Length: 484
Image (cartoon, rainbow, N blue to C red; front, side, top):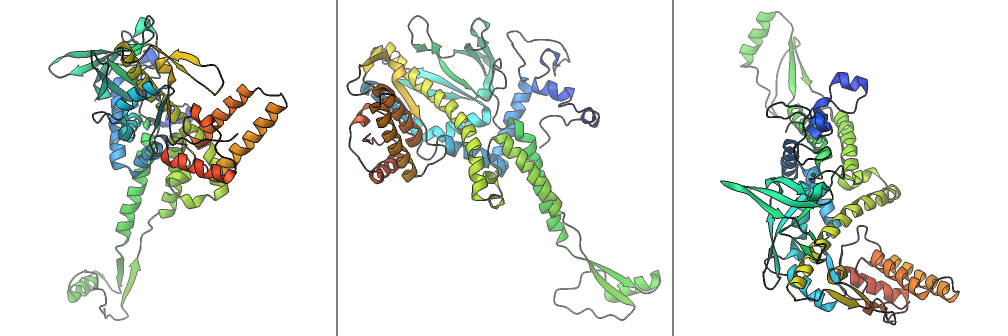
């Protein structure tokens, strides 16, 4: 494939500029100085456009290159699959509602055989990374409020309208259709009058550069050219290695050209001697093998530099993608924390999208009368119950980005419990604050929602707690109790 963005010119490089004018136009960074690829007009702003939007032709090239890279480039596939494995994991996501009736509604949607989001998380998230957008047409029963989804290809989106020109309020999305006018769907958002989410489609846009960007960008966009360069270096090395396996013989004949030609005629040609054969000649003929340099050392340095740039742009440690023997355990652990935070931020984005989807489902059930508009939940035994909007009691949790050792997790929780007990007894911390700290610690270290029934004492020693934590991590939604 050709480079996605035009290569920086030598003159620009000498001036120390970050990009050429062609690159500024291709990325939309030039703003109103962009040039229309159809008629060449410059200095224009599209109707309804705000900020420095990426031109549609650039976005579609990025998406096409991203799809091709995932299908053909092993490094691109490794980056995407690594994020998918960490964000949704082999255990998937855990959905939880503080009210049992609400839990039943979201479970029915999540496990609906025609939806089956429990087992399709990897597919949806993988496409979201490659496209940078997800568009779901919501199919809602008019009387029951039961929801199903119809995924639409984001490349069919021709325009995104804003509500009152506010970049934070996408209102309608236009979808191209063959042989007919565009399909216009309202984007799900909270109605100010009813307080419920309503709309015909759920639209997620991620990895934007500016808050004014109206569309999402492919996750692999910044590193597509580096992935292609890395692939080119490796392919060239393989080709040269294959060519250099053929040995060339330099045969020197002592005499003029006529003697050289006579030697070739007498020998029967210039063919290479067969393996294991004997070639007889006198002192006037000298045979020497010739070998070519593969250039593996130079290519290794080049590919290593490209790999460093690719890994940094993807937010992953270089040793996670290749050359795992290039770093010791201490170095790998040091690099793990920044990577964990970057992967965790992507996971938080995806969990927010899934939470909003489930809250939309709950609001549709409220509108149909299947659920009450508010629910009353208990946060802790003996504490006052809290009344909240029905959709707000829904939580979505993902697997831990960095899997912690069960024994270490158990020991940390026990030490935290002892510290909180001491602070509470000393009057430094209130019991309510201690309960909040316990809940946050549980969700952070164990990775599953903290439910009120976990307040019941049932364990004591760290070894027992370690077994319970390990069971919870394996089951994903197993309810485990702590004695604090």
